[in-house]
Image (cartoon, rainbow, N blue to C red):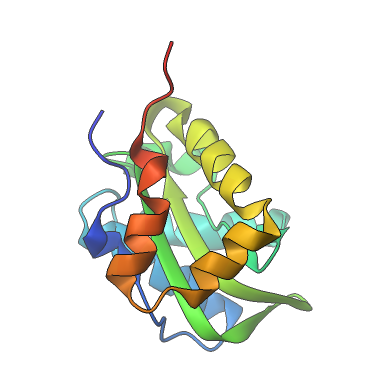
Length: 148
């Protein structure tokens, strides 16, 4: 499996100032990387209408609906960190992590991200990263496949 997270998929700081802008920004990184077709971003908004992708610890994981799986070209992860919190339905979000997974690959990707963000000390380290490259280095472990 190729890397699901590459340096080109990490943005610090993000430019969005609203939840919709953050979803669009995380989704556009996936489009720009060739991982998804533009209509996948529309499906990210559809998902958000049915259930919030806010996860806690400053994290939101916008991703498309099951109906959008044909718009996914390859599994990928985009990470955008914001200097100022984004209001995500009354919750503060500093990280928008866009997810696209081929053949339900997003489930494994989501679990890896959830593990990282479940540790408040780890989140503080991610918040303190001084650049997109430093943030990428801290998150590069999501590319490692589990040993069988």
